[in-house]
Length: 380
Image (cartoon, rainbow, N blue to C red; front, side, top):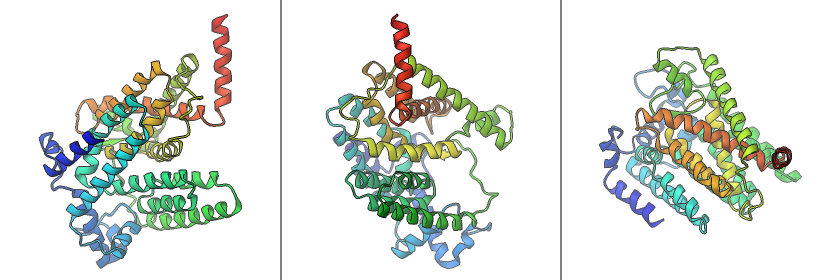
């Protein structure tokens, strides 16, 4: 925790000279925070016209709720340096909490530490991106849910979904998991209101201004970007079909490997310690991964899932799982050619994550019974 604090405090005080050295620094420090604050001032003047095409105050691609919230809190004229540093040190606090929860698991702590000082986190912090706020809200919602304050947790998730949309599947999952009439009703109403607010914003978006794959993206559709670079242009449905097929093959391969070489310790006494935090971040990350393209700094959600998977991997497979994790988060923007390796490694890593989730859900007994039968045949 001390080394992590020193690393990010040093980079913050040096205005992220490491990003400048790599040629990946934004035009100004905390440029994404500056952009959002700019649009919040625009929204105060022209309202939903920020979604329209134009020379100034145009082509906003996210929710009005974020802009409205900044206006309500009177933050639209705040200096981006303040916003960026608040994000930086609250992120750092959440990292320290996560590392603290892993006390007694030195190897996992070390692996997570190496992940938390990787390029996606540099990008997230140096840009001062508001996805930092979404990550922190999800982190807080997981902690409050684990402590039994489920209504507060659901409210946090709802807030995150209306600010940036992509956590809505998590809100739906908490609705499905809700037990008891009061909690079920509260979850249903919250989910419905969130959907309505999101639908209002989505119908304002310019459908022709869809984000395309860049040099700092990941996701199921990324294969289309690589094919385009090779001169093999295919339309969007074909990109998704091809990418989905390759991802399905990865899941089948991971499933067959787990049947032959089981890597999960389901009887581990630590199974429940990080379960909620793992589940929340897994749902958010797999939603982003499957729906298209996301910027590499959103790999922060994948990092929060890594400890739980590593803890419950058999010792002889733990190094392999850790290696896949580290390659997928280190070989990203701005590593050039190596980003291709990182993207394909991430696909394998996500396939293993899905098989792992199948193990710890209602599908687990069926998978384990198949494995037991297979093991008996091998012994005989």
